Image (cartoon, rainbow, N blue to C red):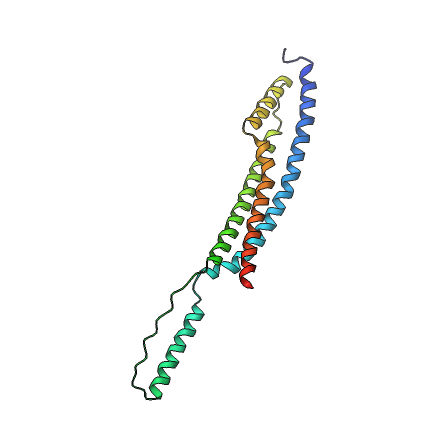
Length: 187
């Protein structure tokens, strides 16, 4: 078929219609996903702000223990007892396994959520490039559209886009697992 054949404008019209519908469907879902992922990441970050300090020894408790030791030494000297008080020794910091578990789960949740957002932005960019028209003859436009469509298929962009909600659900599951451990240890 020649470059001026009547089939090319018909094909381009049908392809444009199908492409527009496909891109609108994917973009709408990704817009919702990006909004949810942003809000969810903010919530997880707020919880991490509260839980990450639990990974360090409480310097306030060390101060209290030191003051108690000084009080005992002063009281011992005031009472005139001949026994010398032992020097202050800081207690070994024991990190509860639940604190580690909660932080690992929440950090993984945040990582998955942010990674999903990055993939969604990349997919939106791929789709934006896909529907960008290249001014040319109808035959060249049809050939370029088919090349781009074949590229989307070979890179399985539709599978990537369709898997993004699963990743967000996984991130929410990790968050709730961490929240369960956190609340369980409060009681």
